[in-house]
Length: 59
Image: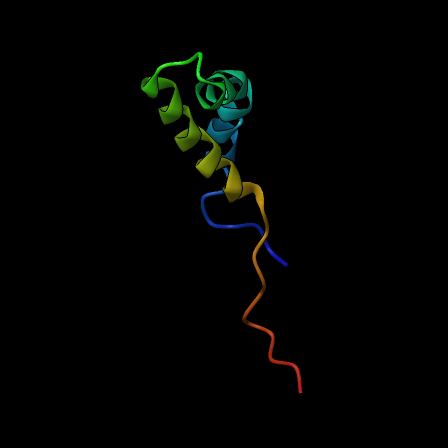
C-alpha cells in the first residue's frame, strides 16, 4: 500500500468533517440546498486512503 499522488488534498477534505452538521441538516429538512455542496469537501478526504502498489508482481 502506498499513499496516493495527491494525498495533500485530503487536508482540504478535512473541511468536510467540519461542515458535516450542515449537510445532515439538509437531509433533516432544515438546511438549504447549498449546504449539500459541502459534500464535495468530503470527496477530497478520500485522498488519504492508500492505494495498492501495482509495481510488485506476486507469483
